[in-house]
Length: 96
Length: 165
Image (tube, rainbow over all chains, first blue to last red; front, side, top):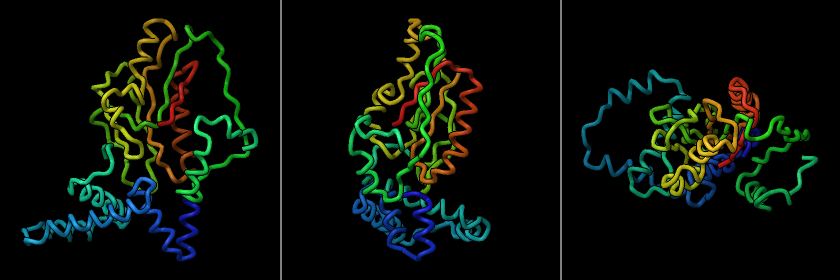
């Protein structure tokens, strides 16, 4: 999808087009696979926290406070792939 | 495109498939730029290579395969590199074959052999690589394409091999 297509979807409030784009991105052109990838990332993140391990919450709060929203959005996409890869069910054969 | 013929494509119907999956992704241009003709015989021509395979020297900043709108940077790949000096950062095409033999997607050793055998006159010091996942066509054209063109031009090639991944 072109950037114009996405910006028009933002302007029109057409969230279905936007989330479809995200699913296609994560699923390499397969929307259903992309939706599954999103679920996989969240499940992996959840699993890591079930035992309530010690985490570096100061780092998280500092990062959220100090970094700009675009950098955090970029990080969000990185985290998606990080957790999918960590899950062991990597649908890609390429490297990040 | 005015002079575009679907039958000229190696994979007819590909564009319809792309457009179905990514509505609005099609880039159409009304202008047509013909291929330049060689000014020297191939054995006297210095060749450069431009690829969208996401191949890059090890330890260079990985291409951004994560960004939802793409990566608009390129890497110089020294033309005397060995495949073991290089790595691929790309998710949008299957890389298993290229990991076994990089030449299937980035034929650097074949080009080195052609130069050594004088089938081509030589190679530019660097080749050029980027990833093809770029959703902002305007930015691609106005920044990345221009920057690569300038970098290629600076190496004064007589011919360029362009290879999409």
